[in-house]
Amino acid sequence: MLSDRAQIQNRSKSFKANAVQLALLHNLLAIDADTAKQRVLFIGDSHNDAVMFNYFDLSVGVANVMDCIETLAHRPKYITQQTERQGFVELAEWLLDNQSDEEKHHLI
Image (tube, rainbow, N blue to C red; front, side, top):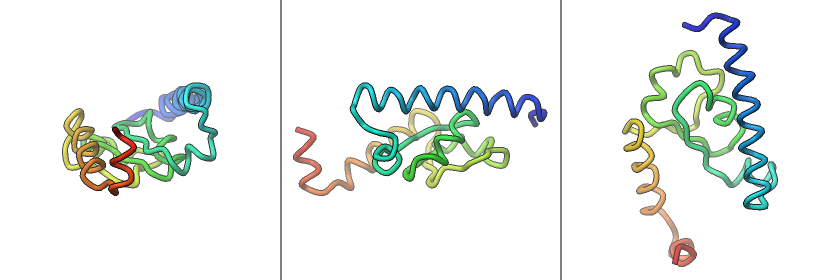
């Protein structure tokens, strides 16, 4: 278990990293923070992702997030069955399999 000081340091790093991620969404994709909150799906697997799990309405943890779930400040809304890369693949396949015909058209 992390000491109080280590937890504070980790949270500080997470806030800085997450601000950078939101700035990238805005600068590269012209997506503002409010739109991103509602429309972007965030996927992660550890403590440094906790702030983003809380921020985004759609947040997914790959299964290995269960290794630290009890100590996460904020948990993902959904958790895959597979870990690491395979968890990401599981989510991607689910998203592709569950699109509407209109959404599929936009991928072409």
